[in-house]
Image (cartoon, rainbow, N blue to C red; front, side, top):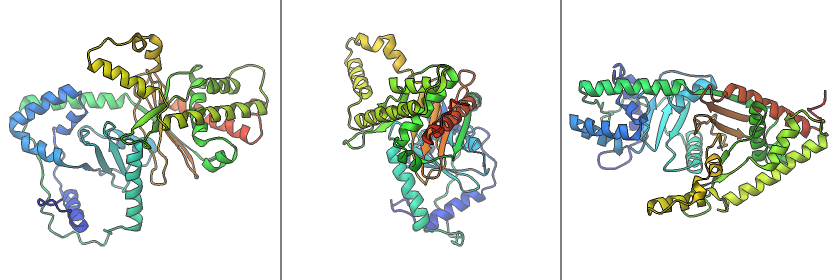
Length: 402
């Protein structure tokens, strides 16, 4: 926007971007942006010190931006490398305090890296789809657009740092690098069957994906664990999300039939187990979407009693409640032709972050973990086996028989 609050013409914005891209100066030796990935209290302390060093105007300019635009020179093609570039990037390259950051690679791949407190997948998906459609149907700049216009709005921001703050940046960079290096990433693009095929089989597509996740974990670790799936409650005013709990008695029974060593079940028995999982998952999803889940209700009660200084009921300190909320399998799906890949880190040190989608052209998984507690590549292998086995059943064959 201009200083008078008017939206700049697309040609001017493109000229500004072009001017930034032509800047040949080296990267800042002490990238202050790495502080936004720090512990919140640590970053608050550093921010006060930055203001004391004369950086208040610079911080205000950054704070006033609706979002940040991150222009990357490299061109990752491997999905795992793309995930790392867009999820965390290099130290100081993403200003994580923003509601969202737009990241563009040298090959033109684009990403929205967004902070979750302000909004959820439904809002971000709407933004994805609008931008995707407009860029195709209503594009306003082209390779032939003149970029010689005066880009007077471009101004390079530089921070004033003393030796203490430089040392703090260096320590934060080391901490950042150690954290991202501890994260493992792996993906699966599966094309043996797709969304329309699953629907025709009588199963809900999301229920099949969640069963594949449960079956993969059971195959890998011989157990079931607390599982989270986000469900939008946008049907309500100010609605955010409710939790679907995909790990059920039905999924456990199906996992045992498909994986455990016991008398080989019939193909019909396996199919019926899958359909039972689908029916149960559909009920849980509808209840969550209509505000009939239990997670947010209990969380609200717990928060209220804590804010009012009351005695927290024993329910919330019970080991069963603690285990229920130590999420090992954190899962989320956002499907759209506009999205190539999406993902997030685990929410617990011994958990998995499972991004997935099922579309008319493919099935996709993007999984993260912190080894050695969990093994993302091993999980992907087990997901593949689970999808293959369920395909055999849907085709009328028994994967348990030679």
